[in-house]
Length: 360
Image (cartoon, rainbow, N blue to C red):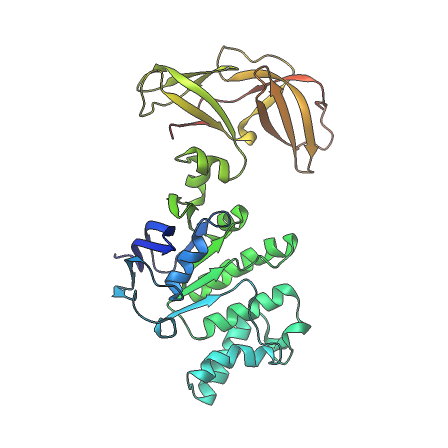
C-alpha cells in the first residue's frame, strides 16, 4: 500500500541557510507521526511547509497520491492546530467549532449535527455556551482540537499542542488526545520538543537536528537502538563511554575504555582499533557494594550525587578517569536495606546485551 503522505527531498532555505535539508519521509494513513527535536532544528518549518504557509525551495509533497506542493493552504485538505489554540475569545465554544464550517457555507442542520458530534467527541457537550476564558487549559485544548477536526481534514498538523499545559495535565491530555485521534482515524503529524510527549503519542518518531532527519522509527527502536551519538544523547538519559575496538568477532566485540573493558554480545560493522562510543542507559546499570564476577562490564566509582524521586533513585558515580556514570535504581521495596549515600564507593555493572555501540 502506498504511503498516505510522502515528503520527497524537501529543502527550505532562508537567506541561503537550510532550515530543512533534503528531508524525505513516508507516513501511513491513520498514523500519528512525531517530528521531534530541539528549538531551531527545522521541525516547525517543515510543518509550515506541509500546511502551505511556506513554499519549499526544492522537493515535493504528495498527499494521498496528489502533488500538493504548489496548492495554497486554504485549498489543502489539511488543518493545523497551534500551541496557542487561537480560539476566538468573543465566541462561544459552539461558535468556535462552527466557525470554519460556516465559512465553507455548510447548511445549518448539517453544521449543527457536526458541531454536536465534535463536542461529544471531546467530551465537552455541556460546555457549548461557554466562552474560552471560562474553560481550563485542557478544555481549551480540546476545543481547538474539535475545531480542527470539524472540517474532517485528511491530514491534521499539531504544533506543540500541549506546550501550554502544566506537567500533570499534559500527561493526562496526551492519552486523551491519542484516543480522540484514533477514534477519528485522521492522519496526524505532531511537532514537539518533548521526548515523553513524542514517545507517548506517536506510533513513529523522526528525530531532527540542523534541518536533517537523524533517525526514524518506533519509540522503542529510537530509544533502545539509536543510530548515532546525537540520537542516543537526545532521547532520554544515556551514558556514552568512549573507547576503541580491541576484539572484533561476528558474535561479539570487546571495547577498551578508560575505566573498563566492555564485552558486547553481538557483532558490529567495524574494524579493530576503531574509535567508538558505548551507550548504556542508566536504568540498565545495577549498583552494589561487592565487585561483580568476571573482568567485563563493571566499574568502581564514588557516589557524588543522588536524587530520590519516589519510584526510582538516580545515582551519579565518579569513576577513576573522572567520567560520571549515571545509574537508576527502581524503588520496588518500601524500605530497602541497601541505601548508598554520597561519598560511598560502589560497583556498577551491566549485561552484555544492554549496550549499543555507536560508530558515528
